[in-house]
Length: 138
Image (cartoon, rainbow, N blue to C red; front, side, top):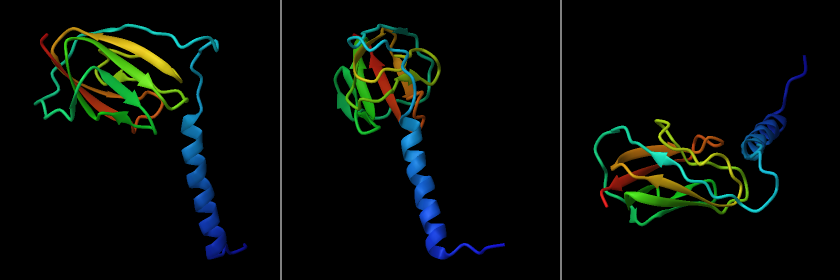
């Protein structure tokens, strides 16, 4: 049985790691290639614990470089814009199922979040992408 050299083993590990970085970006949005769609979803929160200090106040979640910005968004009840700047499929999906933008690879989606509460969310395509939305009364 041949013995793998340290150099060959290192190359195999690097190749496997590179494959893991490429494969999650694949996926089907189900989009017909037309202009970016805008959808609206109404959310009803479930209490997820104490509200932490918000990193930013506003009404927009930006998806860029496989991350959500800000990590915690504090917004008044109403509409929250989600903007995907990555050019690959992402979503903003509430952990408790309260809202979901669906997968989209560019453009913006709208979430109508009318009930105050704390929502944790993730990307359905890339579960390591997480964030928090803190909704306050109007």
